[in-house]
Length: 199
Image (cartoon, rainbow, N blue to C red; front, side, top):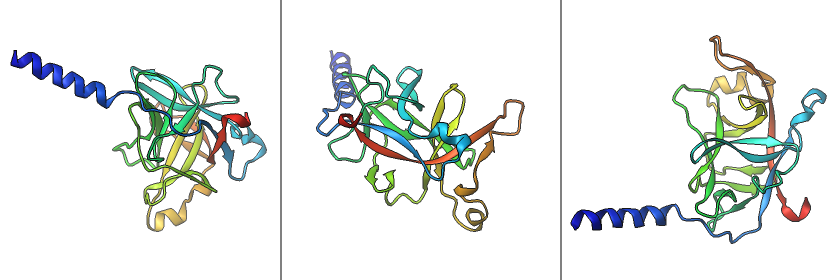
């Protein structure tokens, strides 16, 4: 009996922690705006974020030329105004998060996974930013593994190395040194807030 009540209590806690977050704010899309676009990279401008499914409760933040018809890319701010939540399920939230790799990369992927995601996001004149986060160096878009442009974030490098190779110098990067490496076209961008009424 004690085992049953312990299991029941654990299930109730789990259900409460992953229950859907009520949308109390205006819904919006995240759209790219290139910083210093060039003709050959114009394809990365005015793209809309959507969730590209990669596994159970997992997805990468990718882009399409128009909002996905089923509402996949519709987002809202949580009640604290610092988490970006996507309307992918009525059962639980899907939050925007940056990944952190242990290989000391200079840029990492962005996910939209089951759960509330990462807090600390704000909108200002520069688009979606992370005020007070010294590791955040901005947003990148890259043709990547899913045959569609994918969202990445840049890790701010401190010290002399940052001065010698700033984000403005990045036009293309090689993804590794092995046989699976690829040349990735990268463009620096800001993510803008587009209310649904403006689409």
